[in-house]
Length: 240
Image (cartoon, rainbow, N blue to C red; front, side):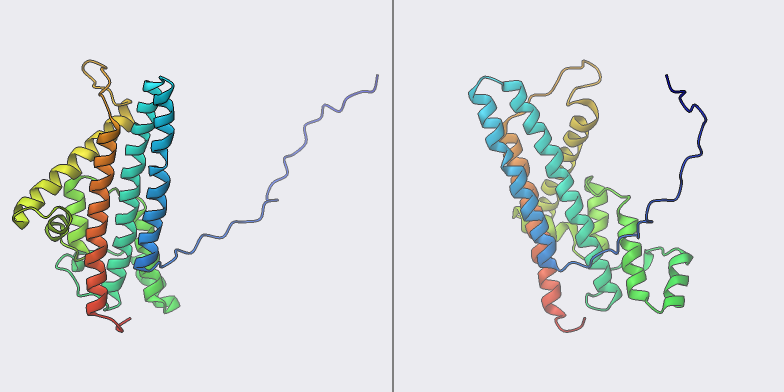
């Protein structure tokens, strides 16, 4: 029998090609909305999966699909707000949109400022910073969503009034804030607790109608934001 070589050999290191960092893409309003619509369609297609499960008596499996849809819908809304936030702040920075009251409170690390001076690419550096900064934040709670929309000059009150058309702007804002907050809490309950209460471990009920209503409310909010953003673009056409 041949002797086996049991000597330990040094590990080969540094053989992989280094990966270059991805350059953030500056999407147009239309492209941002297309990303939302495409993903929304994919989420809505899951209704058929749940319906098929119900038809063969797998009710609990169907509920699992509905719960996953809530997670995906909330993720979709959050990503849309991230994208519209980058677009809005960048438009303010470039002078395309009027600057909001909160715009001057945006804090920029000195490393970003230094890179802008060295490379003479202040616009690119600012957009890169926005992409990196917002990737760590969540805008699904009513208060954080309100602050973020107000920051980019798309008022939370105006958005909710356009989305839900209650008698007054204040009534629309309260109604919208309640919807946003309740959906965010349900999303967290599903994501972190399997939709169960801590005290009893009892799982909350969920229906297709609940998911459809949640989806409709999210679509109404996004459509309202998109409409206001388009209006701001139209008012300042040709400035960027």
